[in-house]
Length: 161
Ligand code: ZN
Image 1 (cartoon, rainbow, N blue to C red):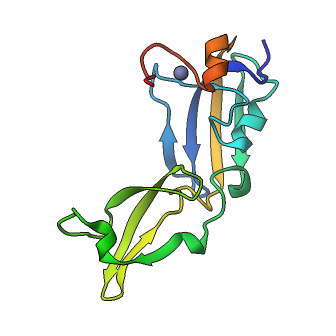
Image 2 (cartoon, rainbow, N blue to C red):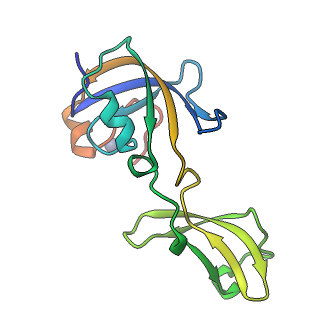
């Protein structure tokens, strides 16, 4: 069957940046399994997979706009140390989770500590990057009614509510 909305798709992928360095990849025997059309993966990759079938291999170049978005200066901020209560010493390279403006979980990276406060960057690590995917489609099946209701795949081991 062809990949369309409400399909469960398993892919093997390799993700590289513009410099050709590998950023991420699915492991052997551990494909990425996702619900197509539910925004589970970035839009540029989801669009490219639409209409493809199991066994096909594709290469996709995804611009930041269809990937993790541009890097936004407003997500780079200096925060007061009081916001980091309970942390003994805040150092560059530390990561925290905070709630974003739409209730989503945001990852915040500490980029510097100075007299002015703690400099943080809440951009996604891949924001602003052009993404190069090499993808092989392993399988395509129709989603179950429960999966559609939940908006994600139930593969029996990696899912908890
Ligand atoms: Zn569920």
